[in-house]
Image (cartoon, rainbow over all chains, first blue to last red; front, side, top):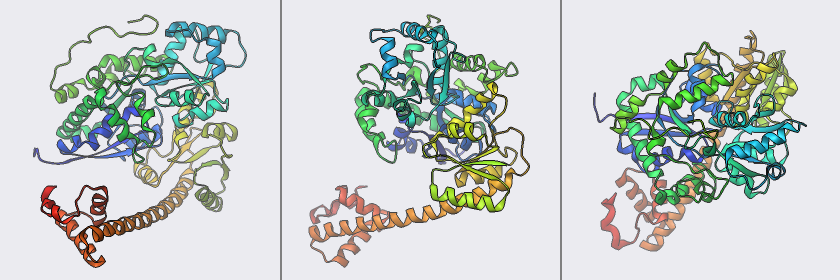
Length: 354
Length: 200
């Protein structure tokens, strides 16, 4: 196979800070250095990402892990086989609620379980169910929120109402009283706080410390047709992830992402959730390199178990087989030039489960 | 058949609705101002939803399946999963469609096709408009760069333009791109830096 062939690839993205590695790989010539001709397409919705992957208008996307499984299983209409050879980020999400609800929970609660107990007390009083918005039905936000609610003794199906609101509309929905709170990625929690319409009571990493957030999903047939090209894409992204993880680069990256043809939001809002940012409550800082880039089968297993727990699919799905078909740590090892070692320590969840 | 038409572009929504009303017996439903897709679907209970792919709240339709598990009626499906070529064309035009009742309706396809044709026509007009705007913007940039060259190199306007064109040809780039470099200071105009042309 000629090694000097250029590999064209179309990558779908959405308006979020943790899309940084793909933008950096493009803007800083890391794709070009690997002879990858990447076309980045910023899509208005996750549904567009899923449909365009299915109908081959995109070859790959930076996407939500549960959405990757939903596409692979065809849970939202037509689907297509996907592979995940790389994780993109850790953390970055926050639960932000209306000030009245935040006041009722109290200002002095530090850990996730204490917040959960206070919320359970409020829910137990009765009255209209609290309505909490997540960014997508198949999102890490939805699964992390449900996990924490259930661990706090709140039934996410019967005792609260979970709805879907696009991230860009969250703040307006909270302001209008259509929802009581939302769980979304940066910078929306900070925006709500800034406007005085909400307060962040919990960050995602307090539910599952350093949880996997976005992944790199590639249609299985593209991956099969371009084995060398895929490795080149992965090498470029891995290099970009290292760059994005360096606090010294955060200002430059925030500037880069803020341009109107990329995310078009103020650099300061982006900077707040990039590595090295002050952890001043309300913003969960994303990580991109090292453990954040590894597509671990254990992680796939957690997401699939939780999807099954909440009825996204039934016993007909062989979760272990699906995890192995989609998550491909072998492709990661090849690109990173390392053998995966077992995780340094156990995963840490809010309820003490490890 | 009840068709919910959700399009952020009001002009296009009106013409798609007109066209659909002529072409079929469908009852065309529209979103109220500020109404979200999920709200409109639960208010109208349509058989089919035709939606502009540029709407971010299209994500809400992905969760209506979940509603279905509690209330048996609406189930969202991506129409025409058996006809990938048609769906590719629809996506290219920026339209997607959902069958809200779950079973395939035999007369859905012509409705979706009509919408696709209208969306495509609008897209074409938009693309042409954008091209025209871009070319106007480029002309303004070239004029500015020309003025800078005229001043710094003390050239007449035709000479300045020829000089600009020569730079573009030498570099194998578009004149507008070279103009941007000149205005941004990335490409020196003054005579004493002439020897630097081969830098890039």
